[in-house]
Image (tube, rainbow, N blue to C red; front, side):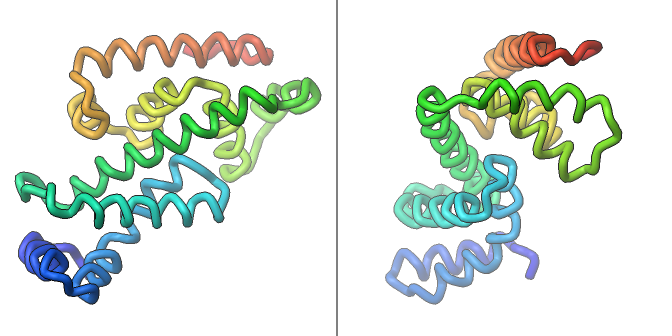
Length: 188
């Protein structure tokens, strides 16, 4: 079912009045888009399911703050971005405690230069992005994986357009240095 502002507003109103079925309808209507967005934050199916659930739990807890100035789907996208960013920050703390082995890093350049399956290329991309701080990973994912404009990225992150430009430039340079460290040349 395609989300419509009227259906969403009716179900939001009913949810706020205590109708659990109304919120379930909102979840069913928007879970595909939310799941698609959250797949950008993890390739682990269990973690992905938890992230999708976290988005809807946070949305439910914040439902009274929805002002209907933008479509509900956009509001959920912003919550999803926030939930995913928090997830990456948590993973970063964990990563600092356990890094990839040198053998894991040595295999990446060969895999990049060889012809690889799209699914493996996505895994490699996620491995490399996982080495970046969450803030850098977020801006690169929104700008270059999800192909969001500067304005859309600013809206989703709550940053200014100037901040998005600066953060994207810094993140791209960090990724370039990381690729050079693992022996991949020609990144621009």
